[in-house]
Length: 489
Ligand code: NAD
Image (cartoon, rainbow, N blue to C red; front, side, top):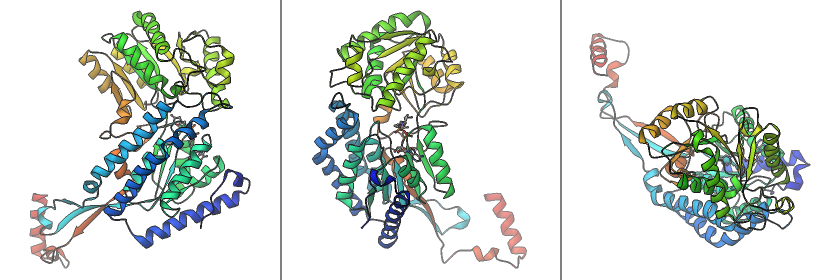
C-alpha cells in the first residue's frame, strides 16, 4: 500500500519524492499488467463517480465553503458551488458517458490506391499514467473535469490539488481513492515542495491548471522527461462593449459574470473597453447592477470571500496602487471596511482613468475589480488587445454584426462569448483552452478524451500487396512503376 503524502511530511522531502515515485510506479505496473480498460469497465468507473458526486454533494459544498472562509466568517456561496463545480462536473460526466463508445471506436480511414488492398485505422489508446495539477479557485471542478477525461480515456491518474484548499483536497483524496483505489487514482496532498516533486515524475502527460509563472516551471520540469503538457493558465481577458450594445443588458450580464466567485475566475472579464461618451452611464448601471445582485457584501452568503489573507491584501493593494497613481475608484455598496476585512471580502470596484503603469493593467486581476477604459472603435479595441499577450477569453457586447466580425477576425483568444461572459466554458461541444500565454491544449467533451489518448496509427498490410515490385535490385519495371506513382500521388 502507498503511504498518503501528508502536508506534515513536507519536512522530509526524500519521503515525499519516494512516496510519489512509489505511487507512480504502482500505477504504471497496474497499467502495464491490466492493459487498457474495456468500454464496459470505463462506463462503470464513470457511473461510480456520478453517484459519488450526488452522495458527496453536501460535503463538497461544505469543504469548499470552509476553504474560502475566514475564521468562520464568509466562505463560498453554496449556489456558486452547485453551479460552477457540481453541475459542470456532472454535465461533463453525463456527456462523456453518452459519447464514450463513439470516441473509443476504432476509426477506419482510407488507404491510398497504390497501397490497396491494405487497410488503415486509428485506435485511441490510453497514454498510461497521467498527472493533473489543479488550482484553488474552483478546487473541485478543475480537478474532476480533467480527471473524468483521463479516466474515460483509460489512464491511471495522479492528482495534486492546491494547498490553499486543504479541506477540498482531503475530500478529493478520500472520495476518489475510496472509489477506485490508489492504483487507479492517487491524490497527493501538500504544498509547493510536493507539487514540484510531482511535476518531476515521468508522467505520460501532465495537465496543469494554474498561473502562467508556475505553468512555465511545470513545463520545464516536464521537458526533462519529454512529458507532453496541457497548460490551462491565466491572463487578462477583455470585455469589449460596442457602440451598438444595450447598456442595461450588458451591465447586468457583465456584473453577474465578474462577481461569480468574487472575480476569482480565470475567464472573468479583466477589464472593459468601450466608447468614451458612454462610460459614465455604463458605470452607473454596472454599479447599480452589482448592488441589485448583492445588496450587502460582508454578511451576504451569496458573495464569496477572497481565498487567503495574501490574496486579499493583493486586491486592496491593486486598488490602492491605482488610486495613488491618479485613478478614480467607484465602489458598490456601503459595507464597512472592518466588516469586509473580517469576512475577507472585496466589494465590486470600478476603476476609471487607468494608465499602463498601474498594476491593474499589468497583472491578471483575479478579483472583483474592473478597470473601464475608453476605446471608440473596433480597430482601436483590436490594437489594444493585440499589443499584449493573447487573452484566455474575449467578450464582445453589441448588435452590429460587422463590428463583431471585425473583433473576431482581428484578435486571437482561447475562447469567446458574445453578449455575455463565461458561458463558452459550459458548452460540452466547445474546446476549452488557451492560445499563446494563457496556455496550450484543450479539454471538455471529446477534446479532453483526445488530450488523454494517443491516436495510434495502425496499417494492416495485405497478403496481396504489390510492394515487392519495388524491392531492389531495381529493374526497368521498378522505373516504370515509380514513373506511374509520381503521376498518381
Ligand atoms: P498556482 O500556479 O499558484 O498553483 C496551481 C497549482 O500548481 C497548485 O496545485 C500548486 O500547488 C501547484 N504548484 C505551485 N508551485 C509549483 C511548482 N513549483 N511546481 C509544480 N506545481 C506547483 O495557481 P493558483 O493561484 O492556484 O490559481 C490561480 C491561477 O490559475 C490564475 O492565474 C488563473 O487564471 C489560473 N487558472 C487558469 C484556469 C484555466 O482553465 N485556464 C482555471 C483556473 C485558474
